[in-house]
Length: 304
Image (cartoon, rainbow, N blue to C red; front, side):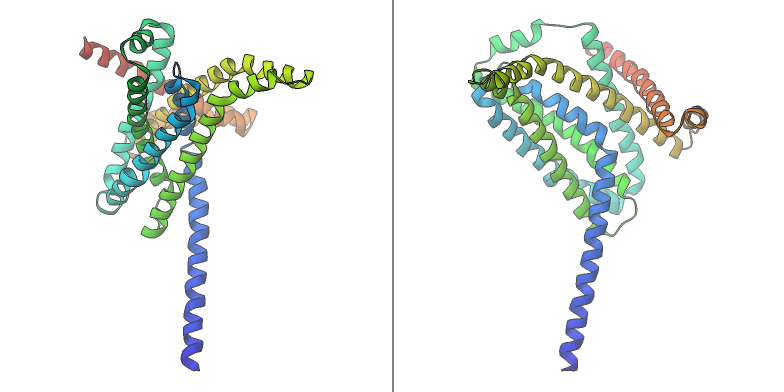
């Protein structure tokens, strides 16, 4: 009887430990997801372009293919790599995170550069060169490659946000973040790419109110996608710049971090915490834009 009671006591202790670890995973998942929010916004903003010019019936299947590729990127490759890095070479996390930050700055600056110097012939030439099936395959491969880089940054940011934690908690948190972000991003993308179809159905309805709502949705979607893309670009520059400023601070280059911190603190003491955050994000974004334009120039020079 005493053996049974001891066993039950052990089971209860294990259950309490598991519950505590589940709470830790939940809290860390929320924290890591919040830290990676800027990259997530850009991921969601970027994906709808991969279905542009393809049949409407293929939009959801394409998003599903990209989502599966994204989940494999995270769970199959990046999370195991992050766990190995955390276990055997944690000192590499900051430099690798900064490399990802440079890429984010480059991507954001390149989008602004292309917006200022558009090349409308490029997508038309792609559509003329490939048939629908091959165009879809090329778009999916391109999306998954781009997602791999963004997912690597999300995983690295999440790992840095978790900090010192037991191996199982870290692994569970990274897996939970990966699944949650993939579901959120591609669920949102699916809604975005089908919103105009939903609007058209409403516009063909019998009620005047639903027809007006449907027309409003159809007319609004280009602006909604434009706003999301703009926010995504700004988020890329902000997150990329922030990663570089904080990474440089950790590696001993303190001046950029201290200048931004003191400027934000001065504004915050007068205008409040929201203004302090806005100044920090804005200055981080300016750093990201300057570095991004520098990398764009280097890449352009090398390419030509």
